[in-house]
Length: 202
Image (cartoon, rainbow, N blue to C red; front, side, top):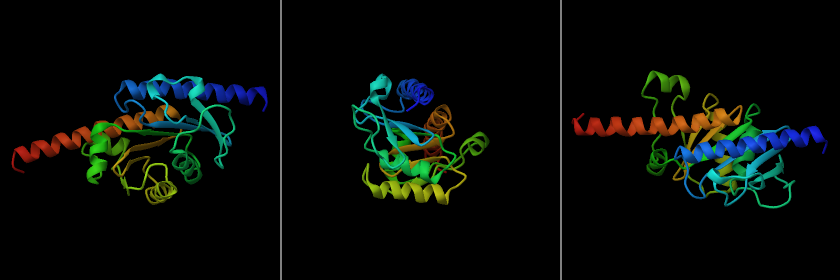
């Protein structure tokens, strides 16, 4: 690998570490939850299995090929690698994937309810947040279901993973992070509105 490409991969790995801390600090994950990846040409950089997003170092970033072959020495990639790769295969413009376990959004994922865009801003920024049917974490079935949802909802970039968490896709890491953050904010608005309507007897 030439020096320029190696430097490019290092730059993106550093950004994963920075975005991971922002995700952790915003309470979108805790402990060992969540994972992040970015595509750089034909390579994918993804957080290692068991890593803590708020404490990432360069040693926690694993390089894999688009076929899933591990290209770097050291740690193993996230157990959600198959899902991340299917995102990049399905959405050719995608360059970043963020998967979080933000509590209110996860609550909607557990009960199997989509998050609705209740405000004009939410409609512009996200639209509805579709629910992807539950399959075991890290399974090929989950990866396939994710690809099918990306095909079905071509204008959506944020999804709920049934009983699991949030999946946000972007043209770069910051955009994917912001979308994941907005999903949690919108989930809170949905919950507050539903609670108020119930209290008011509507």
